[in-house]
Image 1 (spheres, rainbow, N blue to C red):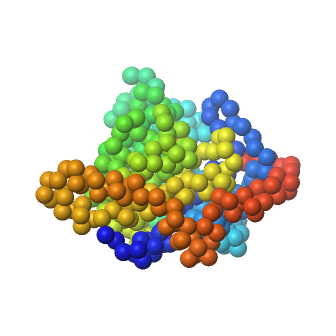
Image 2: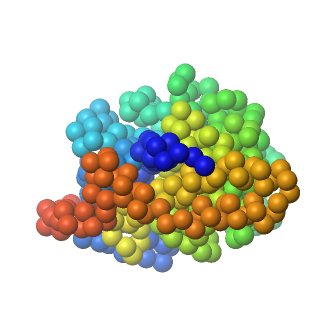
Image 3: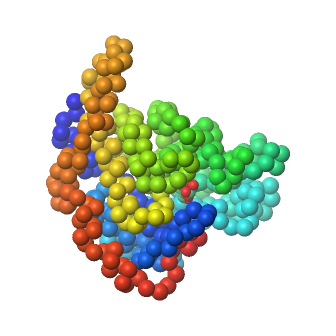
Length: 388
Ligand code: AFD
Ligand code: MN
């Protein structure tokens, strides 16, 4: 059984990265519901993200999305973040919102459009140079909707060509994280549909290329923790985009649909000793708060990741290994379920108190009145949202 101090120290050291885009207006293809007090620019997004870190203590970095978060002076944005106790994190490219990309970006049959997309990816590396970011996250909406529309293998060749050019551009301490997604917005083939495709390209690209597992990007019923274990064993897990789903890429608060799956994923992470910051695995959130207030929605997500992590840290590994090695099926399962069924909220409340935080982040944020103040202060301007 892991000692309490070891568990507490691991929970205190945990780092979860927030997505800037979660604080703007978001929605579905049917409607983006505007909320009052929403940020109007990257500086205000950072301010809202800093509230999540203020009350949770484990969310010190904010991922940016380019061009949504493009600013004239990234140094000023970084200083703004630092003044608020956070830092700029992963840079997310966006080659999915330009009319030119209707038939694909880096895999488009038109070389001119492929060049335009690659130039954006290289410009994102320039942003990384300016922000000091380690990771470039690459998600491609590229794919086809109909059999025969394009050559599946040729599109993979185009993808490999672009990824190689990005790899060659990266600095010595920079990485590229390739994210896969089974479907949407393409419905017949996605050019990076699954972990196998992402893994195959990352193997070709070398050590700087790693896979991102977005928990909403699989077919229903997929054993995601198996994928996580395989990538960890191969040294090719770059990170997560945590969210939750009932049916598709719903981008709901992580852990809200299936906290048991989140626990099983974090169990594989803990067993592979990959929770430590030094492991290089990035624990990012990637969500769209469509109907819930955004800052408390993110606080809840962070808390859900913490709870799954705490339970994973409580697994009695010695007992588990003994039961496994002796073929004690029920015993091994019981060891895991004992950890999962442990109410870790008192433990996390104690950890927060030891960190000098309110043990109840949601209540502390609500009592701060920050959200109400933003509604009053943020009048006018153009609210951030899809495309903003
Ligand atoms: C969309 C994509 C993908 C990506 C995210 C940020 O589905 O998850 O990581 O946008 O670009 O949610
Ligand atoms: Mn994602």
